[in-house]
Image 1 (tube, rainbow, N blue to C red):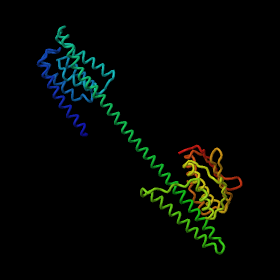
Image 2: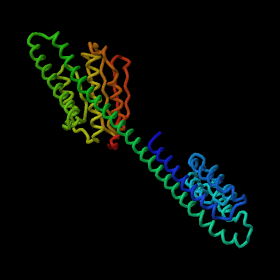
Image 3: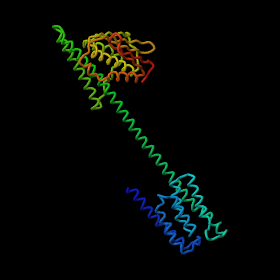
Image 4: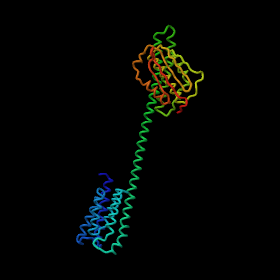
Length: 367
């Protein structure tokens, strides 16, 4: 049994003893009651004992107290029983029915059939039972308010936990995309360069090996930056956007890919999320071409009219060793980025061989 229930049981016992004693005192001094005086003490004790069950059975206990009031004039237990009913059931029809019944029973001078006695007991009964009834209603309403506040606090806490979990999941997915973009792109470049190293003519190996070293160093630097953000509060370098596409293409060409870039001389100002999504889309498309179509020409086209259009397509080429180890997360992450930026993505194989990725972004979209 919990400590709160123990305290409640002790309080009920004390109140039952106190109101039983008051009832016993009443039957020795009050002339009211339809039964003989000898029945007063045992019925008074019975009404006091009934109060022990007032929390579990408020209405039956009130009925017992009302009957004892009629029988021997013990209205003190009735007051406590009425308080319990109003506190338990609140402002309901059932509550008011029993309040009216209690007041009617208390207003009648049972066993003393006198109009004068009735006129004198009526206002006393109304006041005597109105006080515990109103007090019980206030306590019950206060309990409901506290329960409502507690439920709202619990709901707010659950909502906070759900939001925190959603934020953690979103951050986890963001980190996974960044890790994929950084690692897959750089490793693909290294793979292309390693393949070129195998077939290079005399004088080329040293140059290609140097490019491999530089690409690996850059990959490690980017990886350390990302891991540093996870371990500390160090700021992450701003993600590249559409303005960095030229540098991205130059890196791919330096790594041995055959890339053609068709774009306006002056790229338009686009919202940050659109620019980042466009950059990552082109990066992922170049990475996939390096893995699945080594040696093929990759054409990157950027056009601007009523929106921003990105089209990356490659011809048929030779798949590398990394092609068989694809997880499929690249295209999923690409689609997520485009949709989060308000754009649409279409991708698939070309009829003549190769692959195409096409995205549309509305330029009026903002973060």
